[in-house]
Length: 388
Image (cartoon, rainbow, N blue to C red; front, side, top):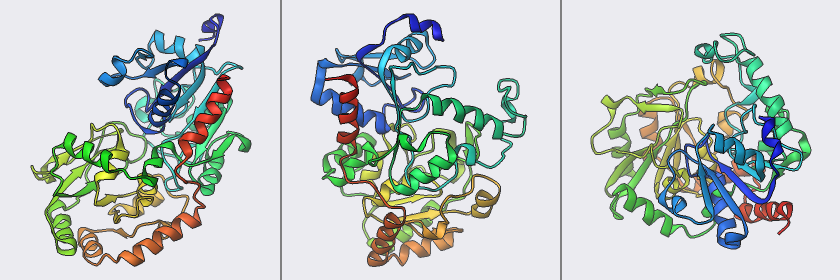
C-alpha cells in the first residue's frame, strides 16, 4: 500500500468510514454533517459507502468510494484527516502527516473487546485467511490488530472516564491519545429531537399516536451473519407495556450489523424490522421503551432518561464463556431479566423515580463526559489540524 505515498496528502480532504462502508451513520456522520454545514466547499469530503444515500451522491463536495476498492485505498492514503468508527485495516498505514480519529462505536463500559476479549472459537472459519492466530484462539489476532491500530490512531474518542480506562486496557493506544468529550451521535439527546422522531416515524410507517417498544440486541462472540434466538416473548412485552402505560403499542426490532436475524417464527407480522435503518440514534429517539441485552446502545439511551430493560436469558454463558463484562451488570443503568416472566414483571412495576436515580448513579459511577457538545469539540480539533 505504500506505493500510494507517491501521491501528496491533500490538506483540505477528509475521509469518513462507518462500519467498513456499510452505513451512513454513527459518529462519522454527525462530524461530517457539522463540518459540511459550517465549512461547505472549503473541504473535500470522501465517504466510504457501499450504498450511499442520494443526499451524498448528488452533493458537489462529496465523493463516494467502495470499501477496499482502489479508489478507497487512494483517498485513504491521501486524505489529511481520517474519521472512522472502527480502526482502519491493518494493511493501510497512516502516513506521518495524516491525522486519524477513531470515534469508536460503543460508549460506556460493558462487554469486553480487543485484547481483553476472552479466547473464543468464532474465528475457526477464518483459519485459512488469518495466519496470525490458531484456529480456535483469537488472542494473537487481537494483539496483532491492536499493535497496528495503535500505530495508526491519532485520537480515540470516549464517552466517560471509565470508557477511557477499559479501552486503554483493551487497546495498545497510548493513554495521551484518548479524548474524553462524549460521542457526537449523542449530542441530539441534549436537544429537542422531535423533528428527528417525526422523520423516523414517517420512514417506518408508525403513526404518531402509537407508542414504540424498540428491541436491539447485540451479537455473540465474533461470528458474522449469526442468528439470534433469544426467545423474547413480544406479545408479553406489549401486554405488560399496555398494562403499565396504556395506549396502543408497536414493536420495532433492529439486529446488530453482525447478526442476520431473529428467529422469524417468533415475530408477529405486525412487528417492524428496522435492521436496515442506518442511524440507530434516530430509532432511540422514537422509542418509548428500549429493550436490549449487553449492547452499548444502553449508554446512549440512558441519556434520554426513558424506560429501558435488559433481557438476558443467556447471562451466565455470556459472562463466563463469551465476552464477559468490564462493569458488573448490577451497576448498569437498567434492570435485567433472565426470563420473559421477569421482564414482563419489570415492565409492569416500572418506577420512574427509582429508574432516574439508577440511571444517574450509573452515569456518575462511570464518570460521564457527555454534555451535548462533542461534535463541536472534535470538529474544532479537525479544523485546527487542517489549518482552516
